[in-house]
Amino acid sequence: MKVLKLNTDTEFRIDFGWWEGQNRDFRLHLHELLCADCKRIYPEHEDTEDIDWIDPQTAEVKRVDALWQSIRACCRHKPDYIIPSMPLTGCILRALVATDNTPLSATELYEHIGKGSPETILRILTGERIYYGIVPLLTPTEEEGERDFS
Image 1 (cartoon, rainbow, N blue to C red):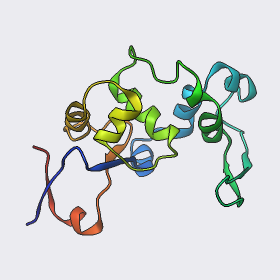
Image 2 (image 1 turned 30 degrees about the vertical axis):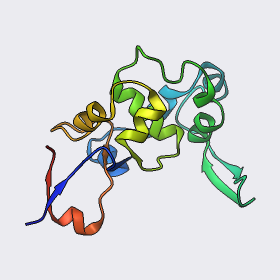
Image 3 (image 1 turned 45 degrees about the vertical axis):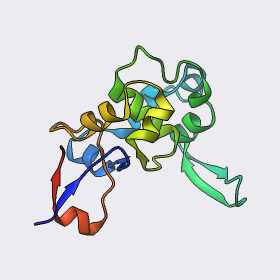
Image 4 (image 1 turned 180 degrees about the vertical axis):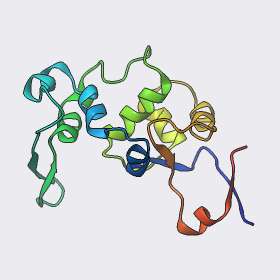
């Protein structure tokens, strides 16, 4: 059996299947991440619509989740989006949401949040407990093998 060694360059992402499997509402959590200004626009997480968003790189119009887009366009730029007093796991989730769930390594996550260390982030994300559905991004070949979190 193949043993996969995860390291600070291993990328992580939010697995939405985990949220469903835990019977948790990811959109409710997204709503909790909104800044006060965006909460006034979207007072509830339900009944929000997808909105049109124009990709600045390609000019392609896409339908996107209004809550997620609010975080990406507004909330993540506020000075209190990620602050030192927040739990590290919450900061990691906020970084992944802010980057549109682009897979990020422990090193890149550390650069986004400036808290802990890449090694600490790796240790937290590879422990026995899964926080906020944040899991390593593995190729199908790696998923078939056994993971070694040391």
